[in-house]
Amino acid sequence: MFDFIVVGSGAGGATIAKELANAGRKVLIIEGGRIVPTERAAETYRVASSGVEIWHATCLGGTTLVSMGNAVRGAYENLEKYYLETEKEIGVHPVPESHMGKGTRLLLSFSKDWKVMPKAIDFSKCRSCGKCPLGCPYGAKWDANVYVQKAKASGARVLTETPIKKVLIARGKAVGVETFNGKTFKAHNVVLSAGAIETPRIIMRSGIEGVGSGLYVDTFITVGGIMEDIGLSGELNMSLFIKRDGYLLSPHYSSFLVPYLASKGFKVRPIDILGIMVKIADEPTGSVEEGRVIKGLSKKDHDLLQRGIKEAEEILIRAGVDADSIVSTHPRGAHPGGTCCFLVKDFEPLLESLYVADASVLPGPLGIPPILTIVALSKKMANILIGRA
Ligand SMILES: Cc1cc2nc3c(=O)[nH]c(=O)nc-3n(C[C@H](O)[C@H](O)[C@H](O)COP(=O)(O)OP(=O)(O)OC[C@H]3O[C@@H](n4cnc5c(N)ncnc54)[C@H](O)[C@@H]3O)c2cc1C
Image (cartoon, rainbow, N blue to C red; front, side):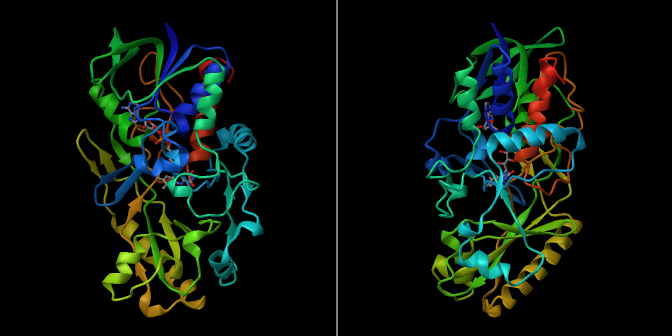
C-alpha cells in the first residue's frame, strides 16, 4: 500500500512526489501523458480553444518541458524560505549578456525600463537557440523531469499513460484513484496535481462540487513587425521584461506573426520579424467544465492589452520596425490557474486524505510566471504532510 498517490508530474506533482519520497514516504506518481524526449515535448501540447486559447503540455514532467525557463517570485510572503530553496535547486540566474541575441540587444537600447529576466537555465549548456517552448534540445533548461528522477531515486514508482478519472472516496476519506479503464490504485493519501484544467475535472468526477471557476491564464498576445535579418526567431526569447501595473512586456517571436503579416500582404521569413509579448494579469473570470473551458476577455483585460500593445508598438517603431507592418496575434494563455482556489485554502485537505498541489490552488489575477511559486508551494505542502512545517 502506498502512503501517497500523486496524480500528475508537472511543476506541482513532481515537486511534492520528490519531497515526500525523499522523506521516506512510499509514493506512486500516476501521469496521464507519455515519456517524451525533451526536444519533442511540443508534440504533447494540448490547446483548450475557448475565447482565449489555453496551451498546456501532457507528458511526464508536464508543461514545464515547454516553459520559457522564466523563474520569477510572486508576492507570497509565506513562501520566502521555499522560494530560496527552489531557486538554489533549479539554478535561477539572470540571462547573461553573452546569451542575448541581436533582437534582444536592439530592443534593450530603446527603453530604459527593461530588466533582465531570471531563468532556470544552465547557461553553460544553453545555445540561445530560441527553442525553449518546443522543449530544450540541450538539457540546459530545468524541467520537472529532474524532480521525477529524484523521486524515483528515493524509491517512488512512476506510471505513465495512465489518465485518472476520479478519486475513490470511502466514508468521507480519499482511499485511492480510478483510471478511465476502471483500474484502481489504493493509497493512504491522494495528491491531485493534474494542472488547473484537469484537477478540477477529476474533483468534479469524484462527486465534489465547488471547483472549476476562478480561471485565469495570464492572457498574452505578441506584437510584431518587419526588420530584415534581425533574427529574434532564432535566439533566446523573453530575456528581458518591463513590468507595468497589470501587464508585462518581453521580447518575443511568435510563429503566428508570419500568417498575420502575410494577410497584410507582407511575405517575410521568421528571421525578419521583431516582436514583443504583452502579457496581462487577466481577471479570473473563466471556468472549466467537463467538456469545455470558458475564458474570454473582460473589458479590463481588453483595456490592459490595448495599453500594452500601444507601448510595445512605440518601442518597436523607435527600434526601427516598419510601422505599417505591425500586427498582433490572437490572445492566448499559458498559465492556467485558480480553478480550485475557492474550495482548497491554506494547505488544508479538500477532504480527509485528499490534497491539491498545482496551479489550480493559486488565486488570480496572477501576472507572473508561476512555476517558481508552484514548486515553492508544493514544497511547503510536502513539509506540512510530513509534519515538518
Ligand atoms: C509555452 C509555455 C511557456 C511557459 N513558460 C513559462 C515560464 O517561462 N515560466 C513559468 O513559470 N511558467 C511558464 N509556463 C507555465 C507553466 O509551465 C505552468 O504554469 C506549470 O507547469 C503548471 O504546473 P502544474 O503542476 O499546475 O501543471 P502541469 O505542469 O501542466 O502538470 C500537470 C500534469 O498532470 C498531467 N495530467 C493531466 N490530467 C491528468 C489525469 N487525468 N491523470 C493523470 N495525469 C494527468 C499532465 O499530463 C501533466 O503532466 C509556460 C507554459 C507554456 C504553455
